[in-house]
Length: 427
Image (cartoon, rainbow, N blue to C red; front, side):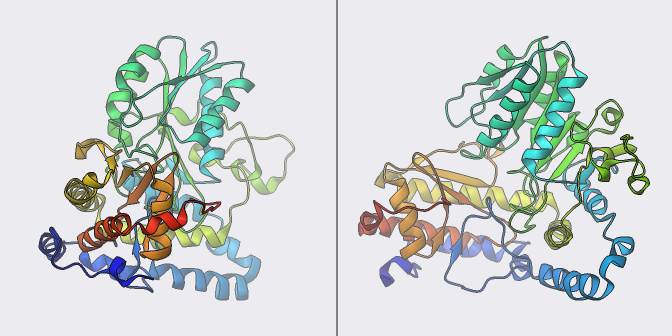
């Protein structure tokens, strides 16, 4: 590995500023809450998979060694049965929701299917779902399947590739619209919608609003209650640091719960699950939207990530996120734009989440060179976007500065040319 790619770079423009910002950072101590085995590795993929919280090791060890290993099935009555509800109650304030409105359940895609189908049934006679082309592709697949099953139409509003098409949505949403479903922070560019603005637009035409919060939960302030949001889903393994494939969450506004049916009724959503009736009777409240048995080990891991967010506070996390992304954009302008990198994220901090996308015609080999030769882990989104996820609880400004300098030297030394034909399943 060429040492010139690793640095250090104390004489490069921006280093002193990065050191100052880190010294003044009120969240600097939270980095110690996470497992960091290689101090030279710069991890900028927390927008796909958050780092392991140290607290999670103890939590999972307890559930494996004591609760499963010793207490066995008795543990269902000693905390396991209600764990998904208790985690939902802890998530609620992070999402700006009220108690009894959030539950951890299934995967994001399954939850999206459940809530989108429930919304169409509740708005019978309206035949259109509206989304945009910035939405996560799986969300579009799910919405397309829901529309097909209901003999409805899915309209995908085009964008400029970076910013949400607010004007296009205003033209597309009308009295025939049953549901509007969008990503709060879009997966590729990081554009972040105004929840209240778009929710109000949907409501003016009598449609229900369903948000995917996967790329904003835990790092962007969310006010589901104040924004009047009807429905929401999201994952827990990105900025919530719940672990690979950890269960997702769903939100249903309290006033809407009794009027919506779970289209995948299961015994965990039954009013009396151990009565084993052949007739399904939905549980009261948010529990009715659960379906099958939850994976307790994965549920337990979520609690470790939530603890750090609860202690830090989303407002302070957001303030550091803005500082990190602004610093990155400045460093991009100074050092990477002259090398052919474009900014594929919004310039305005208020419209940007906590990841920044940089475009380059050689984006794929550069991304592979970052991982294989420069110890910087981003992710890549076709055709040309390198996403840099800045997780405020453990990412430092010095990390951003060093990553930019390593990227600059990859291109200057043409180190990426060796990776033109490289392949990987997960990008």
